[in-house]
Length: 172
Image 1 (cartoon, helix red, strand yellow):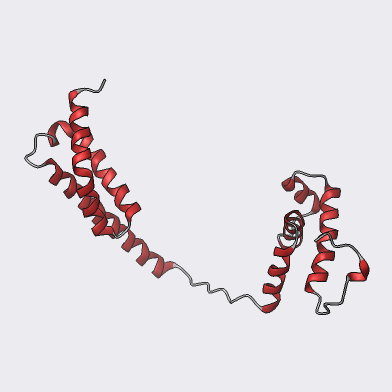
Image 2: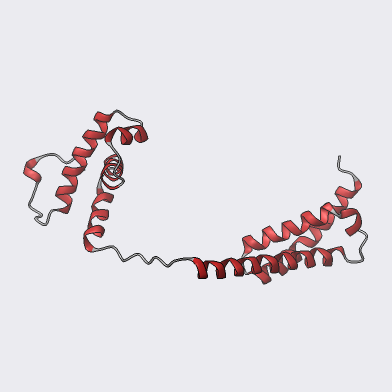
């Protein structure tokens, strides 16, 4: 059974949480951050509850702590953003070319196991044995998936819609 201090704090928390959260949310503009900051303020209140509970307005103390925590978080974020702006080299990736886009679209049409085998072996440049270990299957299975996947990709990427890859089944 909780002691009197715990019950007192529970009642205090239930009565003051909505307003504290509203204040912090107004400061941060982010509900998740506001909840984290408000909870941190209540943790500090609980750790000093014997002293805080005797204040004329303990809720004001919690809101003040939450406000200071909000400002500190904002300052840390601003300092971090400024540091990143000064020290980060901007690496702008070019938009994917038409060939890359066509390849990705074709890969998405393959069965998942074939797609994984193709991507791991050809794009991630992993040997067949490593792909087999990752996929938890025999190397022969990976080789079959690669063969079927390449055949299906050749058909999907072909400019000639009549091209049936010599009648070979693609298992697409």
